[in-house]
Image (cartoon, rainbow, N blue to C red; front, side, top):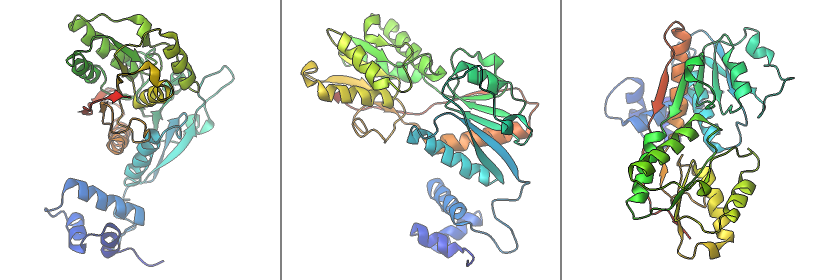
Length: 338
């Protein structure tokens, strides 16, 4: 196979070779976004400079484990994972999948790859069972958690925790709904599933209280929702309401798209429409994508941040554990579903 050149990178991105040259020689005049695209394409094509094995791999090779449950359940997760793998590859770190079950059991033990000293660290992603989290937490390797279960006290975590800010963000979303003259507002989201869901619900509640608007518990679905029965349980909840509220604050776009599916089959229940908001800014739910107020989570940057944090933790194992909040922007839209 012929050696990849700067021209190959330029051709793949339909840009000039000079622009690529500027990036690899640390010259100005290239936007951060384009610079990142060039570096990513170089990684994908396996670009090397003469006399070097790789422009990205100068460190001793290491292996880390992605400790994950249902990684392919959503492009939200796969996008994060893909970006983590790319960023870690720059440092000659291999990302190895270690699949976890959805629910813990007495017979389940962690795979030997995690306990046998063959990995140098772990990133914990989408593991939302308290028993599993506790087993992973006991591992004597550097760890970074993206979110965790609310039953787990952050002081007990033996690793860094990265959280998407939820309280203030959903407070602002709820505020924007109330300022439209809407006062009958419900909330849907399993607050036992993840710390971020609980934070979002608390933001909703605090805003309602600050504006002296009553919270009607009967229009809030916040209990345990089965991982594989979301739509069924949401439909049953909505069917149980004799009168719908004027709006629903949803813990995620995932929840919001189930509401849209329900209302598309029961349009008689929303003759004037209903306001629905989400969180995540996901593009995989066309029923609500671009229609509802949501929070834009840049999954590529989040994956990059997770990788960078684990590299830091591996290098500075003695440093105090960190709780890091990432605050994504709110994207306000009309949000009326019909």
